[in-house]
Length: 498
Image (cartoon, rainbow, N blue to C red; front, side):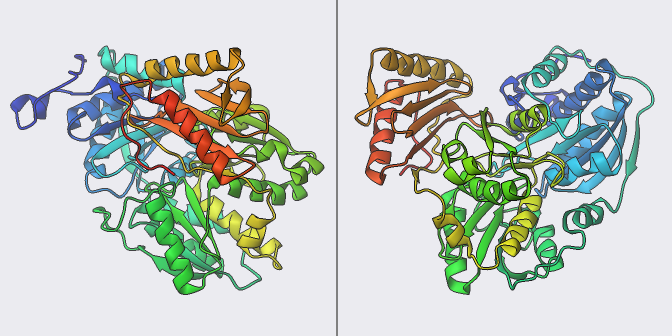
């Protein structure tokens, strides 16, 4: 196999023949590129050959489940990827159009060791990528991604005989059966089902109806042009649209899903967006009553309430704060035997006996309906108001190029650590500690905090802040953290701010 080129001009003979892969597309825990600017179809075939070669090197049985999300170019990309996998001697089980968690489910349902899901996740149209894994329910982490990158970019893919193709029907139906089982709600429940015209449109309404939930549709027609907004339940545009629909329909809550269905966003009956980390605390309170003494993992972008909430403390819950990213979180949940993991971005990792440990927005939706059923006297807003009050920002992402962001972050962490060593403050409060497990989470003397880290998926930094005191303190924390960030001229504008 020849080495892929980092750049090939479109509309040329070479573009149709030679593999082109931009190296920055190999990220911490999945692969993402702008298509066709950063990868072409021969490049995707080279990726498949490299992934198949990695399976052989690691002694993985040469069988893989492959799916694709609902974008107009995803099928062509999946076909190119499968061609490379078969070239590497891999037996491909094509499950057709799918959600990422349906592909993860297929590993269990079809009893195959590996998975490759063609999806750009919640990224806007123009992006593509692959989520892959060899050890269910885990997906590739930094070590596996670095190994795959080197195999592919060095042209070390090894063609072998034995490759084959089989289309497997019925996985979607088995996935839905597995999610719902025989559960039916015993209280009336009216839910806004928001799918942003993405892949979840083919799943979520049916899942709610199977549970006896009254569905208020919100952009549930499949349309890969995403005519209303890009389906991303972390973006305020989608959350505000969900809130408007709740208020207009009198629904009990809204549940929204991203482009590949592995994330879930929540809006309560008062039209208030509840960020996923707070939903995680609500779920942890409910689940800890069924499983006292459970351990819950939260990512570093999440609220401090997992550790400080008096109700969770009374139930003997252990909180573990870990690196942001679906692969990091899945691995941590499995390693320490946690009951669940919660990520502010809307990934939830529900392990046995609730789920199988992978992130599934549909599983979260089912479990939230079960939670509401177990709390018939409470609305979702009641459960929100029962939490200790904190003030938090959405996830805010200032631009920083993929080639620069990690070096920029390293300098920012050093600056924040230096301020701490000098006895400095943020928002007029003394810095208690700086946690550097994933970027810098600057914790103040009253438990307030501000985080800056590098996005693993896009050319951005990520900033999140929280105060247990007031909105004014929250804004002061953000202002002071942003002032440090602005000392780096390579950091650009935010996608959204408070």
